[in-house]
Length: 325
Image 1 (cartoon, rainbow, N blue to C red):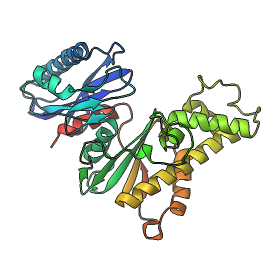
Image 2: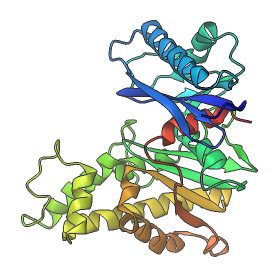
Image 3: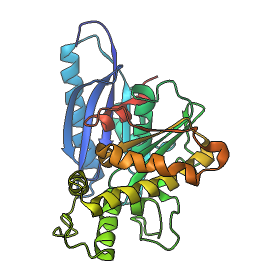
Image 4: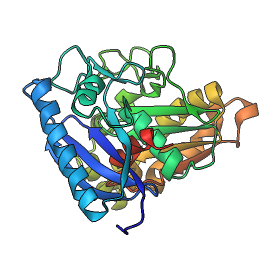
């Protein structure tokens, strides 16, 4: 870091296993970062204390590099986060039960921090795309995040859509197949049950059974051990079942994205997450199938693009963007 005065922000990405924390400059570069475990013990105060200690250490590290640096605030991305209230509410993948007033707890530790803002992890990624990524200058776009679940963020007129309660934009829980697979939320047939990493595994096993495909490269893997990367590796080698998984997943995503386009008419839909590393294997079936699910007035108008965020630091950068003006 040079010795000129500059403004930076802190980004915190709260995942089910790890919490990543970093200091990000105005160009979206992560200057320093650290990780702590997201606890399984459910003790919120102990977790917040550890987070606070880590944040103070990062602030100290950056201040040593440039004593003139100023901090815009702390942005946090978390599952089931309520932007309006600064709370994490009934997050199924975290050990904390009920409603957790995380922002208030951090404000008590950092009373002089100009801003402390939290939103859900997909919205944080969406903000990162708008501030630092491929959506710079766009006022109407959507972000889909593919991973353990399917998240999304909606931007209309240059602003994230939160709804009246802070929870708008759950496109992963769009109804895809009524009465279909059980989603992680407990309801049958949601998009997430088909297009998440686990959803792709379920598709693979359904196809293996349907075609009695004992010769598939995926046939020897038990369900608990199969990873989405295994499906990608098999597809690259020409495995028919693996290629069908990507075709079906892309078609499912095209249906979900078509619903979203009908609702907000975005200029572009950005897709982020592990499966996007497969490139054309996932993007081509989305683009190929999209128009058949769209009203004529929407056909050919919306670009389907990979996220331009740096994969390793995207969650930290996205969270930090919440507090950058």
